[in-house]
Image (cartoon, rainbow, N blue to C red; front, side):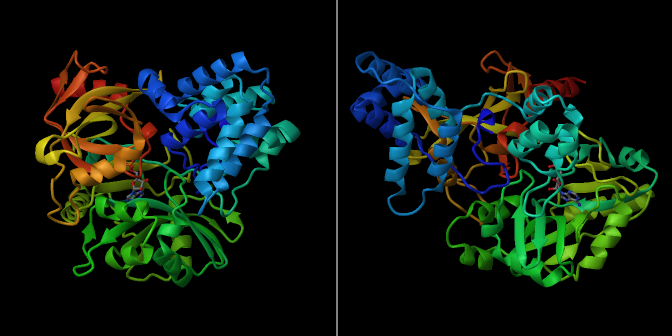
Length: 520
Ligand code: AMP
């Protein structure tokens, strides 16, 4: 897990919660350097990992203590750091971090600090870890992949592979409470192609909300997002709905949660719901102000049995059996047809109801979890699509906009190098003042991005790539100014894509493809 830059499996809600400032203090404390010297060096080197390395190596020259760190020790201490909450926690975290830095050699200090700040970006994709486990313990990569899809915890998988080989991997079963990789959709160019792709299809609205994987075990309920983040705490209302409306004792069901307007009960855009996902305080007030509605579309586990091997039509029947629907907890409507006219009407209804489009699903398809697999879901959305880009920088505003970040540097991901390459600068679409609940203001953006600031040079700040936003634009142009070689003309903010991680943003390849398509 450490090699993946993580200390907990994805499904654990625990976060390390270490700000750059705390790392600065820890380096100062561990190396007996005045804090302002560490800060100065940080401005010069721009990377706190390198700063830690620099000061530890200077200290090493004057003392004889040698690094006695083991991976085990680093891992345990890191977990210990994450456990510190409440009063005095910053102090305790500071001692723990500086104890690691004190014991570290210079190069160890560099990587420990980067790991703690989750800045490793070693780019060890899951595929590489999968292959490494396969090679180390002489098991098949497919076996490791299958186990990972069932239970996304490489540490457990590695132990099983080491102890019992291929058989050990087979024994890794889905477990309630530990998130399962989800089935994902592929794009279809248009409705007609999608309808023609499978023999038997069902069409559903593609709702603009948050994918939730809901685990119920007796009275206990856990809610995960598609990135397998545990969001149970933010949605006590959803927990109650599950307890009320799910007849099965144990199950895992999936659906899309959307925000709905309190008065009209019409669906609201994802941006509104995203306020609930991020909320850590005053949750009860948010529950009242932004009610959610869950639209279920699948079930993968019921009463001890996993349902991956069953076709969608059967899974849906099981879902209908175990759900007692309620206004806010229901099974998503389906239209079973191959008639293009009827399908088009349904598609238009979805768009008129502020939804993204439709999902065309193969009724005979099994549930195949995991990335890059065709599981029989085709999404159909309006074309000349917006791009999901990562914010990697910003500039501070001036005049009446001073104190706010007002211009944002956008980037695509290059999967080959795991770097983010710039492709534009955007300011349009963000508001100065909130005119309605859905508006995102410069203030909102500043609050969200401030903790991610990595480096600052005059008015320009470098931002840790984490926040994904959907951007509309007029055209993609070739541009020598940006590292990607492309620049967006008139980029305009559409919404924040909280449900996507930076790794799920558009890739260099897709940007190139969109550019080629546009030329045609
Ligand atoms: P995308 O994020 O564009 O790849 O589309 C896949 C996502 O659409 C899923 O992860 C769900 O969060 C969402 N979604 C909305 N409506 C549905 C639906 N009816 N069936 C499946 N997924 C849906």
